[in-house]
Image (cartoon, rainbow, N blue to C red):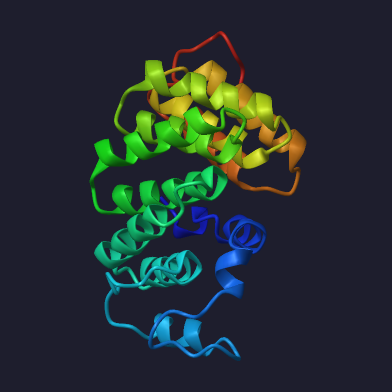
Length: 219
């Protein structure tokens, strides 16, 4: 799973709205109050400070640890941030998504699933969470449960070529080759300059799995 799935832009926007009282309050002990020096100091920390209570600092630090591949420290920071965000459901959902990314990179897939399920339960219209839940389930070879989440995510954002591309790949992995071709065709229609579906179709049509099929022509 790419670290670019880490929804930092959305998270920062939510933080600006929902964490304003924290940002305007007294800075954490040992952190400067002006010029963003507190965030800089937090970003330079070697580990997550368990005494830190400012959710904004904790989330920023967690994302920095994630980008540095310090996954255990990222997990600690996100969990602490959630502890101090008891009433902010929207931000908790985004943090859970990031936690799921951390857990997936750590190979802790069941915990990642649990976090993503909570995201989808909290907001069934959150397309990125729905899509990621489908991806993870399919990666765990649970296609019967995972593929419907792709349809759900695409229903929420039908013009997302990345969702269609992911759907096509998982359909192909599940052996539903005709459906995967249709998904790749949708990617091409939405993003004509995207080479990914053409490359994948070439690979598919040359594969042993496709040989002998007459239900759909490569043309």
